Length: 158
Image 1 (cartoon, rainbow, N blue to C red):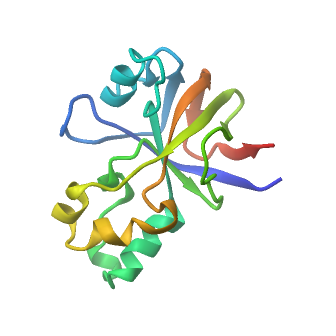
Image 2 (cartoon, one colour):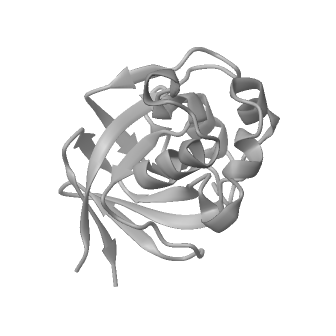
């Protein structure tokens, strides 16, 4: 079984609000990432399709490579506004797969996170660079609550 690592956690408490990075957080069926606006809003909907968003570090780097952005000029991963950064593991490219993080958190993939015009505001051309192969990440809904921390193991359940 392939195993990755949780490289970062981020949240924002209001639309277009500032991003806060965290070392650890509770992620629940009731609210997604604790304190994150998207998880709270999605939790009130039946499908909860966009409760938590996950981004592969390798995909973020590939998009920036395509734009030939120098290392010192690269925006940090959370500028993508994703909740969780996964390192060293390819995330599923289809709905219905389960991503396990830490001891108990389980997230079911629901949809591709489609890059929006905010990416081009960050860097011209970034939206297009993030379009191929789900580089924008995946969204999911929480199946099982968990307390997670940067450095936790990330796995895809079979």
